[in-house]
Length: 424
Image (tube, rainbow, N blue to C red):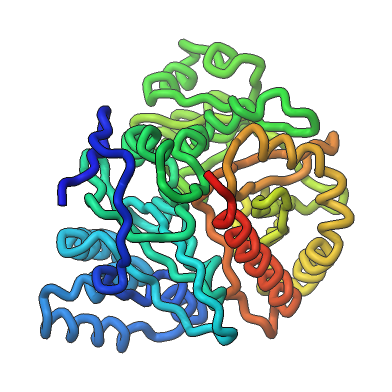
C-alpha cells in the first residue's frame, strides 16, 4: 500500500477505505484507567499485567499503548511517552474497548485522528463515548509522516488533534487532505489552528457580549525589557495596563502562571522561569458579588451549550481540583444550582454570545473556560477542542453531576449520529 502523503503536496487525497476488525489493536484506553487513578485505586496490578503481556509478546502494541497511559497517569511522563513511541512503531491504529450496549443496533463507527504526545495533545474523546454504542478507533499520525494507504472505514471522522506548537505543522499539512475526506468530518484542521490563545482572541475580537482579555505572545527579551523599564506594556499589548497575567508559552493547568501587579515584579518572576517566550494578558477581576471567582467549563456542539462543571474559588486562578469544591458543601450547592438552571439562565443570558462564538470559531465540537465580567459580558479564558470533561466525580459527593453528565454524553451521541448521516 502506498502512503497518502501528509505534506505540501497530497499524492492521493481520495483515500481507499477498508474494514479494520483485524488491524486495530485493542486497548482499554485513557478513560478506563483514569477512572481507577482518579478514585485513588491501585494501578500496580494493571501495570504488572501489561508488563507480563509485553514480556510474553514484544509485538503487543496494545499493551505498550495502555502501559504508556498508565505510566503517565502515575506521573511518569517521560517513560510513558517512551512506551508510546514503542507502541507507535508497532502500530498506528487502536480500538478503544468499551462495554457492550444492549439494543441490537449497529455501533456508530468514529475514527479519531490523533497525534503522539501527552494527555493535552488531543481531544480526550474516549471520556465522551463510553457505553454509547460507539466503536472508537484512534489513528495516530505525526508531523512529517504519512497516513496509511488504506484508511479504516468509519461513519464519521473527528480531527482530535489539539493545537500546540508541535502539532501546528501537522494540522497545516492536514488541511488539504481533510478537504476531500470521504466521510463527514468534525473539527477541520484550519479551525483548530486558530485555537491558540492569541488566535482565539483574534477570532472573537469585537463579538457582542464577549470579553476576551488583550493578549500578546512575547519573547523573554521583551519581558526583560519591561522589567528594566526599557519597554512599555502598551507597546507590546496596546491599551493594556497592570495588573497582567503571564505564563510560559505552551503551559497549561496554571504552570508558571502568575499575576503581575507592576513591572518590578517581572524580574523575580523571570528568575524562577526558564522559558524563552511567554503569553501576557490583561488581568480582569471577575469576582462575583459574593466574593467568589467562578470559572465554567462549557461544551458546545450541535448548536447547544452544556455546563460540564463550575469551579468556585476565593482565588482568581481557578482549576476545579484546586477550588476547594470537595470540602465545601456551599460551593457544591452553588454548582448544583448552576447546572439545574443553566438552560434557562446562563445559556439564555449569553445565548447570542455563545452562538457568535461557535460561528466565529467554526469548530463542530469545542469547549470554553469562561467567567462573567463585572459588566455582564462572557469572559473567555480559553476555547479549544482538547479540554477534558468526564463523569469520574464521586456520585455520593456530587450527586447532581450524574444526570448532567448523562445528559451531555447522550446529546453528544445524538449529535454524532446526526452528523454521520449528513452528506458531505
